[in-house]
Image (cartoon, rainbow, N blue to C red; front, side, top):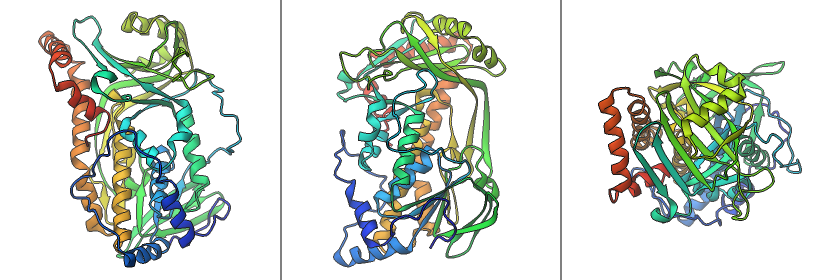
Amino acid sequence: MIRGKSRTAPKASRGIQAATAASHSQNDQPLQAAQISEPTNVASHTITSEEQTTHKQAITEQTVLIVGGGHVGLSFALLLANQGIASTLLEKNTYPKISPKDDAQRTHYLDSRNTALSRRTVQIYQEIGLWDELQSHACRIDAVQISEQGSFGAAQLKKEEEKVESFGQVMENAWLGRKLLLAVQQNPLITLIDGASVTEVTQSDSSASIIYDIDAAKQQTLSADVVVACDGRDSTVRNLLNIGTKDYDYGQSAIVGVVQTDKPHEHVAIERFSPAGPLAVLPLTDADGDGNNPIQAGYRRSVVWVCKSGEEQQYLDDDALFLATLQQAFGQRAGRFVKAGRRGAYPLTRVLAKQQVDGRVVIMGNAAHTLHPVAGQGFNLCMRDAHVLAKMLANQVLRGEDIGDAQMLKKYEQARQTDQKRVIRFCDAVVHGFTHPNPAVKLARNVALLAFDKLPHVKPLVATYAMGLKS
């Protein structure tokens, strides 16, 4: 069992009734797309009446400790709770005090970072009953336009041609984080401890332990059957376990922000490639509505602008220069860029953990793989990891077996390799392929874009992977 002091008020009982309610109350939300099977080495199982009793007992005895309360850590805790598995979540930062009654209007119209959620990620949030809460600030992507600055190659994906409801949804990070935090705070199977700095990780044959400091209280200890580290690119847990990383500096910085154009986005995402790197303009919801009403015209757009390292400050300081540079890169595809909000710059480095499982500890999220933001694949890949691990832990509970079993956790690591490697290769190929200055390479990639747009069966395959529906 997990031991330690909780920073939050005591939760409701973690006994059988609470666990059973949590595991069933959110499962009646249908998915809007075809169900996707899990990897073949994730065991399926038919539950007998005897195992149901074992399942209820195991819920109260087997526990998970999550380190890192960002979007991935919060989502993973909710995925576990949906399976009836209790967890304690440690976060080094102090969360803001929020209430379900707080004003949900967009108080910072042009001041937010955003995430493109794939269709698979949307399905996962539907599965745990959270999508209805999220959807009001989600803007669907109906089409994707791909082109290169100063070149003839171009391609377009349309939802009608691919016979899908949308290619994904774009959402403000602040809204997603707010709703995830509220859901975690209200879930009786999740204990939340913020302001906690991890100082040591130890393991035994039967448990893993975290030592952490919080406020004036030093050397608090938590023990659990399994520890899942979702504590970011510079993961403390990964470093304490001496798990190395394979790093690659792209020599680029991503400038992320929100802009306003004089032309409505019409739910079109624009991917544009320039000599500096890949760029993206994504549709966003309006200030006063969900952006999905056909009568409403959305003018807000999320921008990811990639520049060479060392050039970013000028684009952060000068709105006019930033807007003019965007205009030059995108032409009139998005209309005229008329207003820019506050922006942030983030150095782009690929960080891959050399291993994602060490005994009873799993490395997940950006701690496992931090990727280039091209095509918006990073968070969606993390969500697929979290979903698979939650299912595998639930299978262990159903069988009455140890959820921290090292052999089982290694099977998780192996099960996720194909999807992870495919996404990593794709991101790197796009970044390097579209920034290579050789004229022959430039000609080849533009011909490839035209072929992609015209050849049958190619776009559906790429679209399926991009939506996370084949992993």
